[in-house]
Image (cartoon, rainbow, N blue to C red; front, top):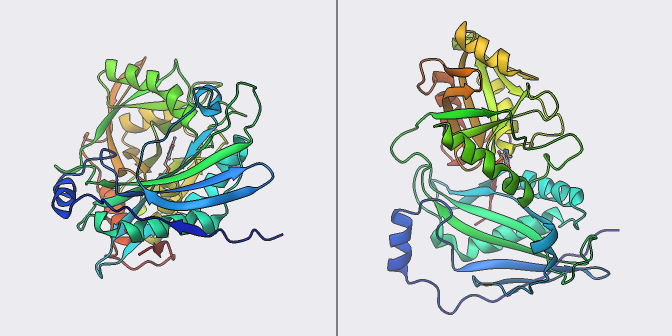
Length: 367
Ligand SMILES: *Cc1c(COP(=O)(O)O)cnc(C)c1O
């Protein structure tokens, strides 16, 4: 059975933010602080499926205190960026991959699947309506935040029979306005992000709630970010905060780009996946494998691991300059952003901003 196409009701705002105020926001948008004039909402009800799709003015929600999400956390989200292209159009980076991951996250949390074409259409409608909110230059973008949560009212523990899908958008400045800065990381042996059979592969709100205390501990250790280890042996490297990790072995044209394999407890990042392809395009050997804390420290000490970086939609690529664990601290390379790290960062951004050929059909015009 094919799903019938969902028709959107378009209700544009009669009071969008005046242009001068919008321009003031766009001059220094930061991240996730300002939102555009509109949002998308689509309801889902058991027996009826998806219905009542709307583009409407951005507004607050009213929630019943017994809203099931507040108690049992059926809540998932995505994050993707729309970049202004040299010809003035606006394109998103691999939005189909976000749509598919959103479906997989939903399945894990016993939530309904939003059709891929509806997810994309929601992005198109919102970006078209709020196109003037897309910043104009360089690494700046319009960050799109699709999410879905249970709206049924009640305290019985079971999958809800009502959900709301929403899409909001927020202008995002360059992640490193003063130039790319390496981060320091704390390898957490006390807390884990995900365990086999858990929700590590799903982009769900609860994973983030569970990570915050470890992030606070990293800060107490004087580090910027937490690195997650596997739940069982606390030995294998998994991820950094909300980003995937990469290790560079060797240097120059013979360098090998290595990333932890998707064991079921890692979030399968779209940036991570794209870099495997992009690194190969640039002539580097790539490998997905399991890597231990000892491999990392020994590799930095004997110089076989030359660079480490993290990757994700928000920051694209972030170099790692220092690592620290219960057994001591060590420097990654010379502590500065590595050459290959920066080469990959520029190559990926060039595709996203329309300054390099899109060899793999990754960019999708939204408006
Ligand atoms: C979203 C996310 C990532 C990065 O995924 P991208 O698709 O590259 O943005 C990595 N790790 C975690 C835990 C995440 O939530």
